Image (cartoon, rainbow, N blue to C red; front, side, top):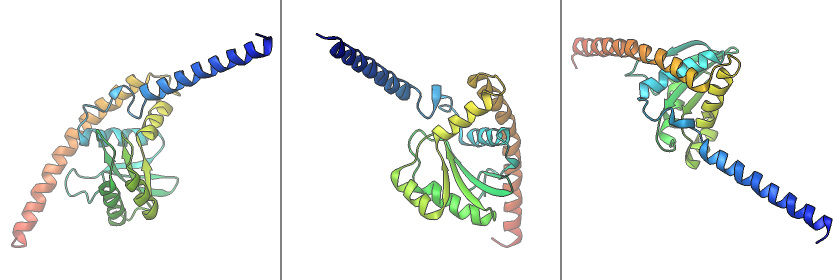
Length: 196
């Protein structure tokens, strides 16, 4: 065996090893790194996303009431652009229903951009539908990227950042649930006055 053949074989083996390492990394570092969203409730995920967007420079970040939200969970602004955001913490891909909700809610809240934010991916039909309706899709990879971006400059570990934001979100969810109960009571009172 001559030197050229040996070099080609070594390069081939190293390339295969690098490719195998890359596939292993991608498989083990999917959208939801370490399963950090696995035990999150929907409202907790919504609050977590609101805190994350705020940490990334979004302004006027507000959560809508837990009920009667018209398909939108978060209202926020960035660079003079208003966003109406639907959040979905799922164990599987997000379908077109979330896109429909974001589209309708965007108009209701008079936002410039409608978006769906999830810890997972989107189905092919959801991606196509969102493209037709100009709805922005922020999948689990995007959310994890935001987490990394927020954690790295502050020299925090991603897990510490997650715990801190999650602690904040738990407290805010409790406050928002109280607000939602008050809104439901008000809606019920209004319905009584309307004779319904």
